Amino acid sequence: MSLSRRRFLGLTALSSATTLGLTTISTRTSASAATDYSPAVVVGTGYGAAVTALRLGAAGVPTLMLEMGQLWNTPGEDGKIFSDMLSPDRRSSWFKNRTEAPLASFLWLDLANRDVDPYAGVLDRVHFGDMSVYVGRGVGGGSLVNGAMAVTPKRWYFEEILPEVDADEMYGRYYPLANSMLGVNNIDPDWFETCDSYQFARVSRKHAQKTGLKTTFVPSVYDFDYMRREEAGEVPRSALASEVIYGNNHGKRSLDKSYLAAALGTGNVTIQTLTEVRDIAQQQDGTYTLTVRQIDAEGNVLGVRQLGTKYLFLGAGSLGSTELLVRARDTGKLPDLGEDVGQGWGTNGNVMLGRANHVWDPVGAVESGMPALGIDAWEDPVNPVFAEIAPVPAGLETWASLYLAITKNPERGWFKYDPGADKAVLQWDVAQGQPSIDAAKSLFDRINSANGTIYRYDLFGDTRAFENRFTYHPLGGLVLGKATDLYGRVKGYRNLYVTDGSLIPGSTGVNPFVTITALAERNIARVLAEDF
Image 1 (tube, rainbow, N blue to C red):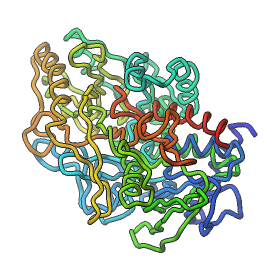
Image 2 (cartoon, rainbow, N blue to C red; image 1 turned 180 degrees about the vertical axis):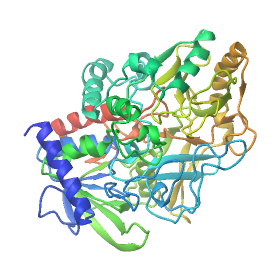
Image 3 (cartoon, rainbow, N blue to C red; image 1 turned 90 degrees about the vertical axis):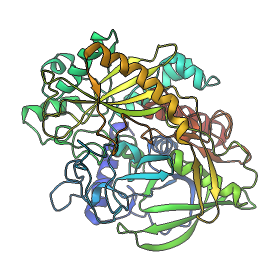
């Protein structure tokens, strides 16, 4: 069956699940939520999980995917699936009483956040003392809530972070495959120069060039042709309607439209939503038993059951997969897990900052929610930085330039099991983020000096100019070649695998989802060839 045919069948299944209000999604009419065994189970529906499920399904392996969030395919009372950033409602947040946007304030006023009813919303901010982590909740994971920046890292840096992985193979085969499957596209440079949507990016480019810095266009999984039509008034707005961190109603090629649709279309993959995996144990015959908890969208627990499988793939993300194995090791359910489980976690060096522009440098009232340009200073031998030129999609002129800087921070955190709370707690001190601030400050001090501008001190709820107390790019915890072998097989256990960002040791130097996807493609190809 062709890939396009599989994707069509999968999209039909997703649409039917919405129509029927189902939490079990499959192209098979006999698929059941109550099954107590599946030959293969994939925990999560994010990038690595989606790759793994498609390749298992295409190989004829019956596979069950377990997703903690819900399927985002049903319009609310306003006719939209997702709420925007300016008027968020309960769809925005995972069981919060108030939204938690990355910009905590503007002119020291909390204008971005709203009180909301607790609900199984699309974005979660998980707090660990000095660090909090943004994660997507729903079928498609982080692809639902990210800025769509599909960046392949510089080869020399990939070889530095994962030296035992064949870079020729990755850059010759698996990165191109990932980009093709994800639907990566590039902005029309001529349109970029004249459109209203990226006036904010052109202003930052001018300031970078005046400093002697170079900028680069960034590939995206947002459909740039759709965005051009948005600006022309030909289609409903999404990226140009302040939609990004709480989901996009149009234009974005999230995983439910690519890998997951194709996986469902194999006829061998079923997705069970609003299902949280709590525990993993191994039986005497080598199979695995999962304790899973079913909830509804209001958070009511509908039941707890046991599910068995022979092949278990963890794709619940850096937080989710790491917690499952740390808990299993420290409660004695998988006692042969090693000390490397829970280690090597990093923030991808994330730092957010803003600059105040001169009155003669307006950024425009319409700002695309999808970044398309970055300041590339990763070759700096002392303070390498890749800085996304990010929007402030407020719907009015702000004269503010915002950036998410990715830095090369060597600091790493680790996870400790808390038996009282029955969860893995990140061990990360605020001082560990200082190298990221130092690198970002080095770069942006130069930009401010060259342009006679200053930092914004009103964006993060206090007077700090740099915000490094959260990350959008959690990486590590189950590092490739340490907690696992070089293909994601968990050391100490057969037929147990990791297939997400927890494999990457804390940094990619750019937005990480293309690397997570490509690495998952590489790993599952070897696993299918040797283990099945």
